[in-house]
Each structure stands twice: as structure tokens, then as C-alpha cells.
Length: 232
Image (cartoon, rainbow, N blue to C red; front, side, top):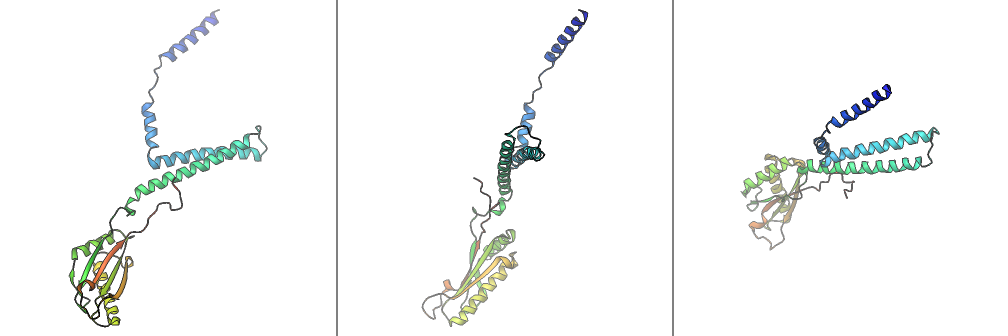
């Protein structure tokens, strides 16, 4: 009887202690865990963890089957489902990582940026600019310097004064003069393309200031993070 009383007292004491222990609030811990998994990078890590967990299940069952240590005829199907789930989580991890890269590499995307352009004018028979928007050229040069993936095309032409062979060569010299101006303001030679078109179609031997010009137009590359990955 005494032993029973002692046992009863121990049980009562255990329950009293259990009831007296306050329940710990874990909301802040849950919030911290959720914060670690937030955003594209956090979701990429989460899917990677889930992929590794499923892959571990598939590999463990594979080892059992290869060694003949199996006791459940459905075990292989469980492994196949786990492997499929692992592949899906890995794909989702790659998608989230791609989205994160896109947000980090935003400066490489120029879709919302306007193209830059300006014009340089010349006197008849001359390859020396006499009227140029110098600040515009400097701005384009600095833009090209800051964005090495951007390119620019310099298109130069002449009026119809003189013969066509000479004017073709003259348009090339005009384009080259603008190219040098851009390089002096930070542009890289490999960013620049010359398009010398010679005489502009019109009445022969006519001096037309609008045709004695070199224009600069920039172009932005089509940039894609993860070009082979469909994010849908």
C-alpha cells in the first residue's frame, strides 16, 4: 500500500509540474523562420531543402531495394514519387533563383530606357564638324562607358555636291570623326559601328545641310536571365 501511495504521489507531482510549466510562445520563432524563407532567394533555398529531403528518401529506398532489404511492395513507388517531387522542387528552386538574379541584375535590363541619339553637321566637302551638340555627344559617350553592353551606330552621309566616289569616302571620314569624339568621352571602340552611306538621294550638285550629317543612335541588347528556363 505504501508503495502504491508513493507511486500515486509521483504521478500527481508529475502532472502538477507539467501543468505548472507555462506554454512557450513560438510566434516570434515562426516569424523568424518565415523571414528566412521570404523573397526569391529564400524560396530557392526552401525548395532546395525539400528537393534534398525527397532525394534522400528516394536514395534510401533504392539502397534497400538493391540490397534486397525491402518489406513493402509499394516502397518502389514511394521512391519514384519522391524522386519526381525532388525534381519538381529543384526546378522551382531554379526558377526562384532566376527571379532573384533578375532583381539583382536589373541594371542589365534596358527595356524601359530610351535610346540616345544626336547629330553632328558638316560643311560641304569637310569632315570637320562645325555644328555639333557637344553635350549630347558627351552624354552618349558617358552612357556607353557606363553600359558596356550597349552599342551605338554612327551613320554619316553627304549632299550631292561632288562625285559619288569622293562622297562615299567623305562620309566615312565624317563617321570616323564622330567615332573619335565618342571614344574621347568614354565609349569603347568595340561598342561603335560605322555606317557610311555616301550621297543622300537628291538633285545632283545640290548643297543641302540636312544631308551633311552624322547621326548617333544607341541600341540596347536583349538581356535575359536564365534564357533557357521558363518561369511560368
